[in-house]
Length: 264
Length: 126
Ligand code: SF4
Ligand code: SF4
Image (cartoon, rainbow over all chains, first blue to last red; front, side, top):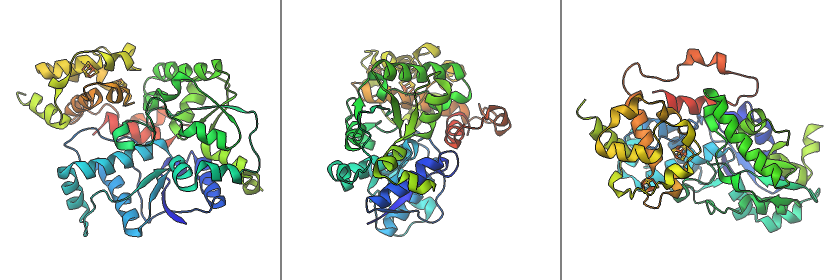
């Protein structure tokens, strides 16, 4: 099976591991992730206003590429996933935006939101299946207590992202179980790490990320897992906590036994 | 600047008058303490047309765009969109960028993901 894959800017630079382990693990599960030509950075944040189309074009372009290739589009980074799904949703529901985007890009045939977008975790749940994934695990992370950190961009706004229950999600916990570990439930798992505020207000970023890490730690977590490079950065650099923070795909590669192999 | 309210309402694209003033948006906001004007105040001040006060406040740069208020507002007002509309009204005026490329080198460290920089430019500059 081949899926169109959008790594985004950070998976090409600071988050190379997130990318590498995503591809290796997908391959081990029978899915090849193929980048479309000439994709551009999604911009990292969706512009939540009605009267702006230009900042949505790079997401629209990759959505249209996936449509032309006739395959679903897979993303890993929470921010890319958020921007691309919100763009798709608004193209489907806002005729003026769809008109502007098609005009700008000169699309023929027009793009009207036809592409199916999966976050990598959704691909594991809805395409591979967590039960099938569990069968492929060769190094189960037995007894490891792992706190799933969703943050904000994976789940919200839920009407556009439609990934999971925005307040009581289970997709990451089910993933943790599938790789043989024990999920830790804590209330801060769906609250923000501070995001881009780290650039201009370290105190605020550190307040947010330490609240998340303290809550995970107090609930017995030995490790925190995330899909987002900016969450990883804030939780590691700004929280003051020593708890390890790792990417979902790194744990997956380890469980599937493809991690060491790739480091040889 | 008599049209500022129209411009903001047009960017926002929804109805601020649906707000029932329950305060849930502000109660759930992770930036509440850092904001001079809180999410529910953005909604009511925009409704009243008291928008320039908001445009001049640092509060427009304190919102993390975390969508907690969007998800949890019982009236689907989406306060983060109101804040975004006010922020854009400010940034779209010539010379008002809150972040410029020359400021970036001093903000870098070896682990900072590119994502942080591109996102900040989306939120702090036009
Ligand atoms: S989106 Fe902004 S205003 Fe709304 S809860 Fe998050 S930080 Fe607060
Ligand atoms: S949560 Fe919604 S209805 Fe309640 S005060 Fe905020 S905007 Fe108004």
